[in-house]
Amino acid sequence: MGVVLASSALAIDLTPKPDGSVLPASPKSVIPAPPPDGTAVPKPPAAPPEAAWRALFDGKSIDGWKVTEFGGRGEVTVEDGTIVLGAGNDITGVTYPSELAKMNYEVELEAKRITGGDFFCGLTFPVGEAHCTFVVGGWGGTLVGISSVDGQDASENSTSQSMKFEPNRWYKIRVRVTPAKLEAWIDDAQMVNLELADRKISMRHGEIELSEPFGIASFRTRAALKGIKIRKL
Image (tube, rainbow, N blue to C red; front, top):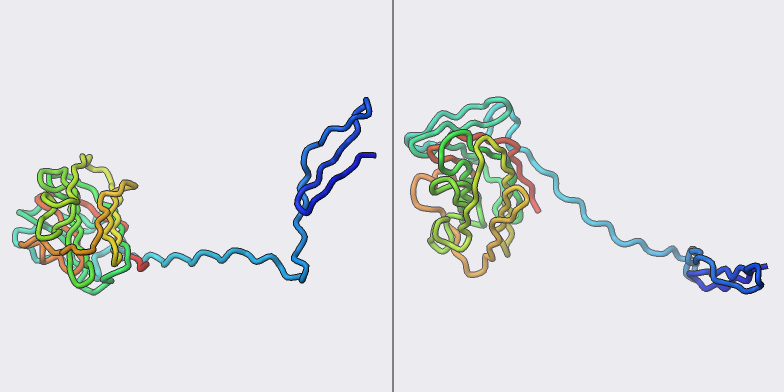
């Protein structure tokens, strides 16, 4: 008969070999005994559920939105489940005039450049009592950044980056606002990771200020938008 040496968590079976010697067999798991007082082993606390996304565009109309009163704006239409911003001279956009959130929230949408060579998504949003714009594809078609930080627009401050954008390709754009940081992503690449301490956030002076408190615009570019949604953190 084999000899079994057991502990509270592991058993080793010493099975005789034909020559009479023994070698340890593979360890066999043993279910740990409950605590002596009979109480159950506590389970780790469940993670809190994430807040649900709230859709801001139903794919059928721009109800709840208004066409932003830019001078020289292009036509705004709903086509094939998307908002299409016609190329204007200079800016075309839509604004959601109701207050959505000021802090601790995320915004997400998809955008694409159909024709044109400048920004196809200028996403304006609140950061506390201030507002700014996440520029995607500006200044000749490649610039990405926040306008404005410490009085400097997206071409001048530390958030400025360059990225090549393909026409008629959808890009997922996401912005997160918390008291500590302003963050932004394009697809899965983080483009902005800005510590807000001792920073001044503001809009670039000019017509783009009409996008407040929450709006999306394009500059001399025909663009399409879909999947616009928000959630609180």
